[in-house]
Image (cartoon, rainbow, N blue to C red; front, side, top):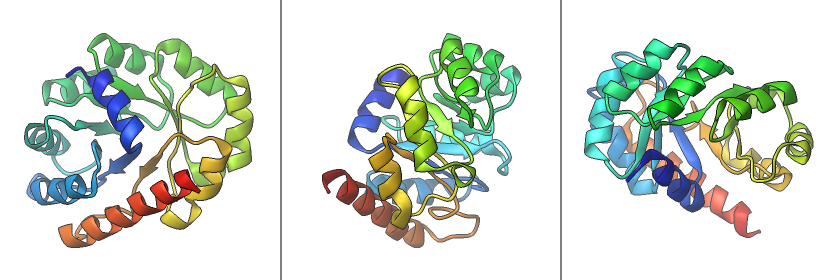
Length: 212
């Protein structure tokens, strides 16, 4: 299955991105299993983690139906490294048109980080599949709603930063399509059991708000 097809399926079923900053290759199997059990299908290993390409390779092999890739991708060279490691997702904290172009040319899904309407339009023009509103702590649901009012219909907006089960509702009401989940879901040294429990809590909260 192509990466964009996986992206469409997972973002229809459960649009939550697990951001596994600090994950080690040794932890990857157990953490991956915990997230898969909770229903997560989009896994991001930031490149400032220990041996991130090894973790991406391990997760991509273990969960071929998941969309696995890297975060904190800043250069074209890093895009190519992630692709060679089996990654199919590129997430960045910023908008770099060259990074987006390279990811798209390799058939990967690309979610660059934006904080303004200008950056959002630039990212979409470069070919981004969706937008990472980052850092969400410095923004607000009102800002997201205002951006979506002027962006092309169907633009995917994903708040990242400071998202916890208890604050998802206002973002969803404003039009957020999903979330990137960081330290509230995983942090270095957190047990697979704790990750599994917190992942399930996130899923329950998200689905509850969707049906509210």
